[in-house]
Length: 194
Image (cartoon, rainbow, N blue to C red):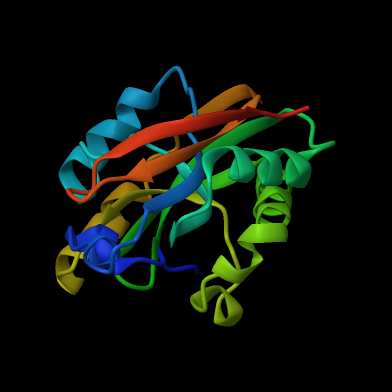
């Protein structure tokens, strides 16, 4: 399984700010499930990013750049041109290397992978993270990260029994967020699909 790319983000350290980075960004989808509260309840217990950023599916992992907002918007619009809105269904929680808990994609994985591939073209190609050269991108929503292996195994076992489905009839947009020095996220722009 895929690991989250940026332990700095997980631990609250932000070396990008110390390096004089103009903006640290991430591109993602924020699902609008009717039963999102169930996901947020799990995140509140296990996800170090709970309270910093809402539940999301990462398409482009955190990167530091001085790319102008409008230039980035044009690049993204070009990259996703022709990608139609799609249905997203998530179900089942699995464990992944590094102590992660993932809510798995049951429907919409091909579209998420295609968006991921397209977004890492053009001016974002040089930001492709090295860990993805070794481990393929697996779309998911991170619901936790537990450093203690015994606790992580216990959580994986416990959450495997959850069969609740999380459905979004149509994913219509992707978001670019800016991550500040305290790891809080703010939406910089929203790009519609289709």
